[in-house]
Image 1 (cartoon, helix red, strand yellow):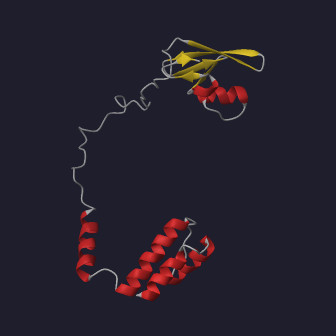
Image 2 (image 1 turned 180 degrees about the horizontal axis):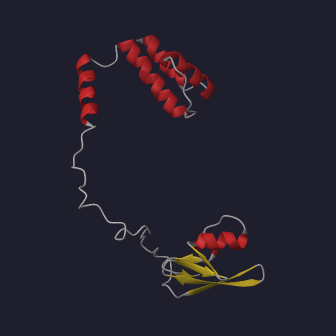
Image 3 (image 1 turned 45 degrees about the vertical axis):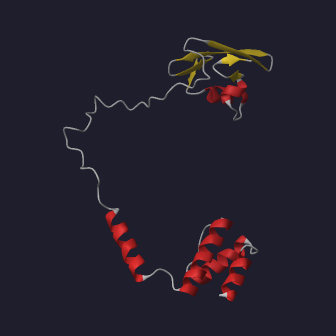
Length: 163
């Protein structure tokens, strides 16, 4: 048991590469992960299971039962009548409006590199220079050429109040 405690203490001192090698040694197969915490925990579990005998036969059988029961459906499949028809199914996703946005019809203005940008808030997007965008971040990216937060770019804070 003292030997196991030393082995477990050493695990935290190993590099990820060394842990991956140790994992392959104790499990008999390589791993693709590079997450040190996960590797330490899995190897520690395996070393303890090998030293102390792992799960009891009763625990193994119960785990098998639970895994088998997980395949059962709790609800019956939908019947053909319950399925939505193609014309009743609307593929557009309905999202709640962000509370930081002003109401549709509002025009946001911002000076950027000597130009005044005007963006109109639409019910389903934003219009800027004749183009429709799905988000303020998309507008900001089109204008600046780089990713940036649309709310920060247009200086919207709180409930649609420009600061």
